[in-house]
Image (spheres, helix red, strand yellow):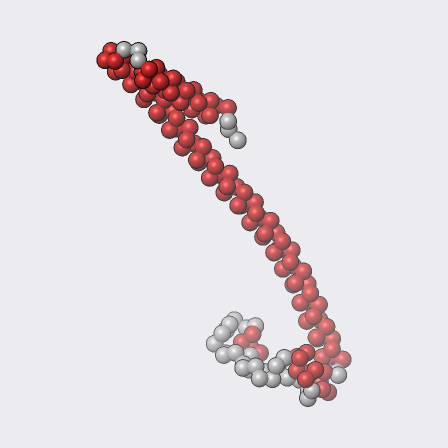
Length: 146
């Protein structure tokens, strides 16, 4: 037997798999068989046809694998894009909800500041900030939906 035969068919030093693996047929059935073929078996037309059929099946499975791999990567990219959009949407909802909470809170604080401190600069700043936060929260909820 030469090295070319061992390269095509398999390695002579390869350990057979245990018969407990894959008990549903498949590899366990042929795991105890020798992986090395003599030269006269390789020259047989039946062996050549069998090897060509196996090679064709391999090429077909490889083609299917490449298609599935490409589709998987495409779907994985789409999933990442959707997750990023969802994360932005959640952050946007939290921000707009905070604006809608803090704005009216500051406007309600005006009723305490005006009788006690009058219309000082602090009271006016609280009024402007509360109004801007309330309007920003409303506009964010109504118009900036993506």
